[in-house]
Length: 70
Image 1 (cartoon, helix red, strand yellow):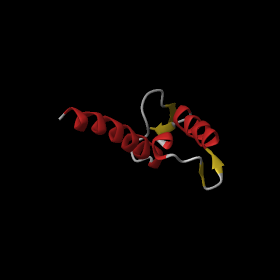
Image 2 (cartoon, one colour; image 1 turned 120 degrees about the vertical axis):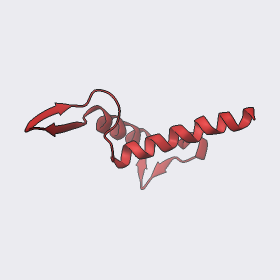
Image 3 (cartoon, one colour; image 1 turned 180 degrees about the vertical axis):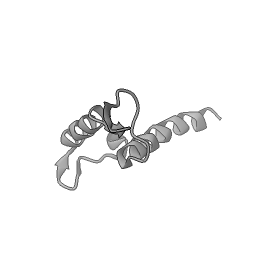
């Protein structure tokens, strides 16, 4: 997405740093249920701003390819 938009930095952070931070967040999701903690191994946390952003990026590319076929 960032290559598509030709963005090199976000608020002074290099793109590589942003990607590494996103991976860290996605790989370290946890939640508690009935006083027990669980590590989320698949998908993003519902309501997470990062999950919403990743979903929107995915849909941008998915919809763009579909529109080209129409």
